[in-house]
Length: 483
Image 1 (cartoon, one colour):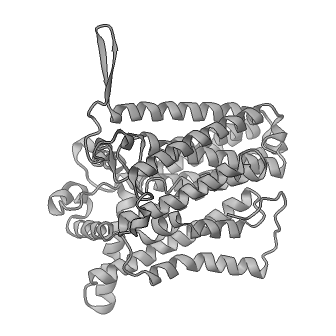
Image 2 (cartoon, rainbow, N blue to C red):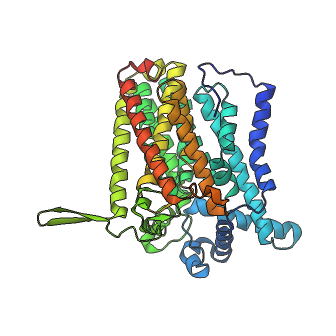
């Protein structure tokens, strides 16, 4: 990542920038075309089986699919099912109506991969938008460099999962909430309400794609609370009414999407809850991912509920398991992160404080929020059990953009920003190794223990930087934050 950060990016679209935009949009489709057989066939096979269930059972899919297609248990909420099995079902119907014959598995896989490539292209555009809001001097170049990293190429384009769609949802929700907060600070009720509605609707769909996306929701709820407070503080009763109306519409959309299927009684009428019930990933140490508990030296597929030590105080004894200890550690991390974030942002909650931020200070605030989201993602990958190889996919773009921003401003060591990018590259190679054999010389990179140690060090280093950035921000006036 060599793009610089400047306070005044140009607004004119130059021919060079237009070419970079074209290259970034075309890249995912080119990668799929150049590597037609490099993808995770098991995941696309699962989508085909879920399409079988949708064709056979329709609204009763969640009740009947496990018995009908036991090889691929259905663990996605409604939107995730529609975006995977539903798309395959639609492609089959289209083939039969247009050509009068069913669509074969290879053709289906190819079409699904090109369909997913459209979201990888959207990710590139949204990353460029976010980099522009952060006042990167060449935001399109920054987004293209991110898109070229192995982490994005393998996890976002080649693998064949819905992670690229999830990233698009996270980026759009983040940008929309940011724009709503900015509009509220400028006391523009209608734009604030519209941006807030877009964010709410996006988050409703985002939460219903994969259970994994739940780990980003604490951040979005935190940012949402800041935006709603700002609407009430800057716009009075009218602003609060607009914000609450947008949230109610978003909640109605969530419930409408979440209740389209009949479900077993213990699912409480929610495909979101059903997805968590049927995803027992945390019951093993790791699902070929990396976390702190890999370093115990146990088989990663072993139970995470087996104690690794016990605390004793007289007659009182408490055994500690990776599963429960990981949950406690992650909960403490979230409390720490959001408490320190609130202390850093509290001066901006005063009336009129938000609008007084200069353009550069606004970019610093956005970088701080990006770092916060990235740390919540890195934290659950390091501390919780059951992690898979791709689970940090959602966190890396926010970590890289934030660390590079702070490093360019001298508020974080450049070595740490380079280390973050290096970890992303090594993680991309690790994910590729889970999809196909790698040269033996890379044996360290695709070691789960190496990845666990690498990301544990990264988490500790970034938390130290987070504390220093937060302390510096509290020592300044709101309008001078993060200069």
